[in-house]
Length: 267
Image 1 (cartoon, rainbow, N blue to C red):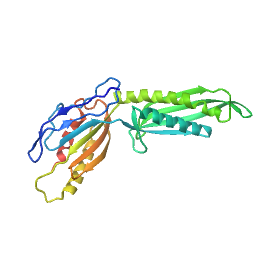
Image 2: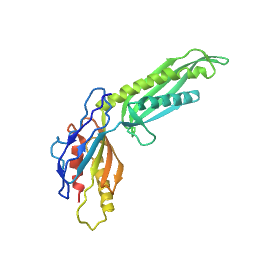
Image 3: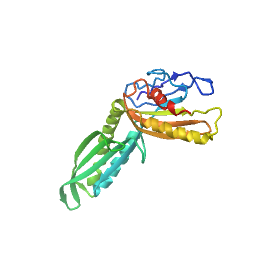
Image 4: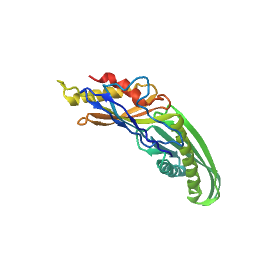
């Protein structure tokens, strides 16, 4: 995986009239060879004075993994899910619980071929799907079938763990790489909150209103699938948003367009 450091320098005037030149840095990018740069000097207009972009970085996808199965297949599905979490978390995604960008859905079934006392011969079917966080879009599906050999007791089920886990992890890695190369982007943008020299309104109340307004502007942008405020610091007058959006929507970098969108909130 090739990491690209996305560096740019922009000069802008803040409300106080002070000249600034913040550095824009990029984080690790999941890509097998593409370049997903952010260019704050490109776009249709210059970054406005009223909103200062301090930093723009890339982030890995946040993924949840859910495994389902009935009877013996439930434990098998749970073990495959655990292997999938470990496999994609190495260099592909951040595995989380709760709020996510993408869901991995696993459904495992077992078929009885024959039973002779404590010995069973089973087949396993593992279905995997990669879907959007809201479940409204499916990014990919696959079904894996495994023929078992006659085994005694729990060994008849556990024989599928290794081959099924390897198949699922390999499929997920390939399809999640494709996802970030062709479908979606993740950006983390830090904004400097506007601070007038003189105001009768308490700063914290103004900042809270501006942070909320920024979020409303960001989530309404073309191609933005989700926008979460992941940090706000009134003492430093900054807030940070994490955006999930459709890849290719902003060829000149979403930070540029985000700054243009939220400039109207400055009071």
